[in-house]
Amino acid sequence: MNKSTKHMGKSNTSLGIDSQSSVNKCIDLQIINNIAHVHLNRADKHNALNMEMFYGIRKTIKSLQADKQIRAVIVQGNGEDFCSGLDIKSVMKSRTDPLKLLFKWLPWQANLAQYVSTGWRDIPVPIIMVIHGRCWGGGLQIALGADFRISKPDASLAIMEARWGLIPDMGGTLALKELIRLDVAKELAMTGKVITGEQALSYGLVTHLADTPYEKALELAETIKQHSPDAIAATKKLYNKSWWSKPGFALARESFYQIKILLGKNSKIKAYNQTHPDEAPKEFIKRKNW
Image 1 (cartoon, rainbow, N blue to C red):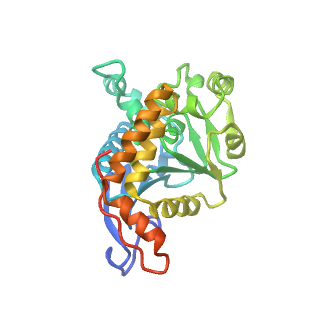
Image 2: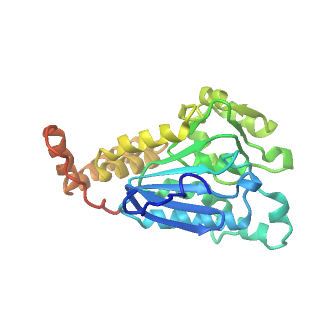
Image 3: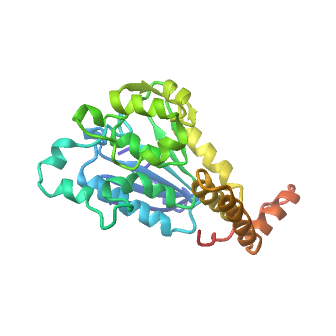
């Protein structure tokens, strides 16, 4: 049991733990002081993705999307690696599992394989991935679904699908086009090249490097928590929808979201806290639907 889930002699309340649960045996979810901590918990298999982990991640994303109290999400892998990619042997031993991963009703919707990457984009709080060890193939696709990626300098990252005669089809393309040059993306995908965290930073694949990436992630989450949850949610939605859209749509969203924020209470609470630094800050209320 790792130190994030083992609390000898203390109650959850005394530790500031809002809730703690195992989504399934592959995913642990813990909410501490309104920050959700998600652990990929298949360390003996280097957190390789089997069907149970796919289902667990989907269930976790849907649960966090509905939780208006959380202010940030930190995702990390237990053991030596963040995620070493798809567990080919586990998934391919069943004739139906690959179909379950790829099936979708409509072409433009995410299937299960894609949802474990793209689903994080629809949670209206910052998602921070903590990368250490191997972050290969499907693991990198999951990490690309986050708003921020904090990596150890010696972490190992790769778009690994070419080595299996496949294309990267787990939704990471949405983030790749936002983060790196087209020629760099093609090189990484066509060669299956393994790069370090330092190289990933130079390419724009990760946000920060840190020798202790979890502590850096927690620091970032706590900083963002100081601001209105509605402003944070609106900013994420504004940028995700507007980064590649027509200028007119971006301007319209700015105006609409700002009006919605101004009509709410959290902007007033933030303004009060900002103008009364010597007083104890007022607590924010639940965010609106974003």
